[in-house]
Length: 271
Image (tube, rainbow, N blue to C red):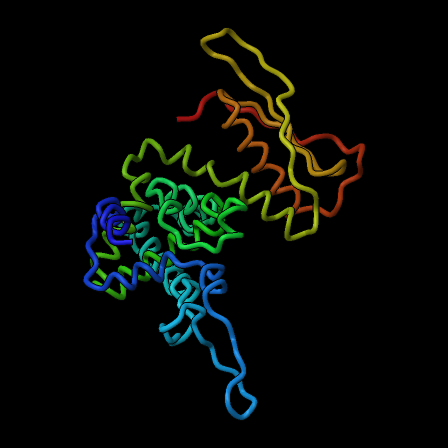
């Protein structure tokens, strides 16, 4: 694993003094489960022994505890950085930006940019089933790497890693408008799941305007009861605006009648 570790250290711009910490951060429980088994011990109790001869097992070594620690560190560093960088932002804005930056969807993209999937230790079954590209698995591994850096080098290199690989998209204030919109689709999906509703479906229902300044109208629907439409200068913008309105609809009203009018909105341009 040494060559693989060196390559990853280059990507994350941090060299570990104790590489076993990084190895643990990259170890999924499926890998441990295939290599360690519980066998009867003296007195009817059980003990964990390695299935690899000559290697006594000293406890589970997957990355779940590291994920727990990394999540806490990530939340603190993101909150601190946002507060310092945007002192005029209100609590709602800060909360929204933080929610996006620590979401599984966003961390999945961060993990993919570092090609973490190439370095994961997975069980054979998990590997065959596409675990190296699984969103939750990669997001969890990213948080575990944060914990590994913290345990190996302390807070400053951990903060630097998070600033470089998580908060960098906020360097340009001109991107704030699109960044602020970028989380509504994932929030809507989570809201629908929490209420036991179907997955939101997006449909382009219209386009207008000249080729150089097209306006797209997108409808998002959850089953046959909840729906909203929005228009924007891009499909992405229209989709996010429609999702934003449907979130408000879900939170502010009880199940509307199927024949209730659609909520509609439009926007001329988004930076």
